[in-house]
Length: 557
Image 1 (tube, rainbow, N blue to C red):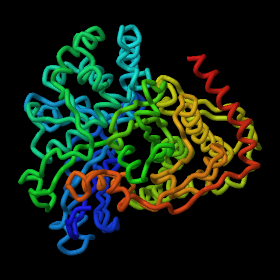
Image 2: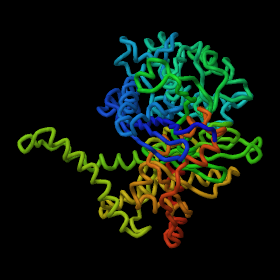
Image 3: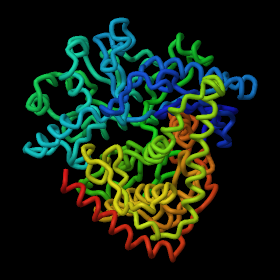
Image 4: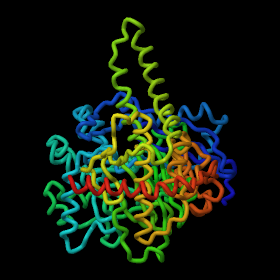
């Protein structure tokens, strides 16, 4: 530990719906203050069309919310806390790229593109680019060098190249104005440090390695000819991306005068390279070889690490990439996940409450009152479903469901598949269906764990973070029973922001490396779920029904 006294690190975590700021005492690991701000345009559903798998976010949501969340943090933190911040780091969802012009300006920040969804960030869950992803996968498989071998062997519509190509094909205005494309975690870091111009832009290892096909063995990205063979619209884009990348514990720069003023901080504050939320969350969860960290939110992201010796020259099939230093420098970061977890429950909630929202209540109360009642109803619906479902014995419903309501991320990415439910009868009621959906998400997670093990990656222990892990005993106990292993839930409410703060403390020189920072700052365990042996035994058989249904749906596409 350095001799920096009273220093704070600031972690900024951009999720799907909101940005969270967490202030951490680097000397004690105490979480000093936290604040959350929701994106205003996203909250209104602007620029999104779920029927087309279109989920876009305006860069102003990110900028305005960042200023608001940090300025609001100082109202909650001890007096003078802002003057003690030594470094900050940002994590975001991903892959969430945006087109920028020759000056590095995000197109949606220009007046002519201010309302154009194609000029905005394509959120991780945007699946517009299924065809483009399939074509990239086919090209890699036909190439003498498979450029997807370090990314699980299958390119996803959730990722950088597919999304960029989709927009270039479908929007000539954006195509003509776009000079390059940038991931959210790199863009927000670049604008804060004034390095967003393409001549100065620097890329983080996390996004580049897991989503942009960067690898050291081919000196950056696959050759231009590979991309031109997919579509000439990609000609030259790889040469406008930085060939060098840096891990999240390295210094990207310091705050510009403008951003220091925006955030109430000093221009001496160190800004480290950006990362993805799940990778930072794993750092906050004290990830290590043999430990799988599962970030459980709207979707899930599963992260573990392995040594170079353990991985060797093996390429792990069907996951979201294996990248040197993407989580912990000196280890290979391995990523998997589910495209829907909490989103599946939210879908069922919206399905069951839809008629109530349509009732004309103007004669009873005004719209503001109705909105508050609906919000209360939505919050209570899942809680009541969970209580009732928890009382249903395992195996009694006869219902089997898939968790692919937003496609399948892993194992073996395929965003063209859809979910299915079998075994419904006239006697099936809402809690039974909800129980089947919860079991489906647990089965999907088990499939990931088993794929890691089949590929020779050691998984001895599971640690969970994220909202669902803190809110629902029923869901967590179901997971413990289905996975047949203990599950630790962390104490921190903001594990991803905590991981970002650990990166920031390391970059600022408070600690010599991430492991040293983790020893002081990482979260402790709050609760452990232990499998019920009787239920775990029943789920061994029921999991086979899930696999059989998935095989049927895969074959019937």
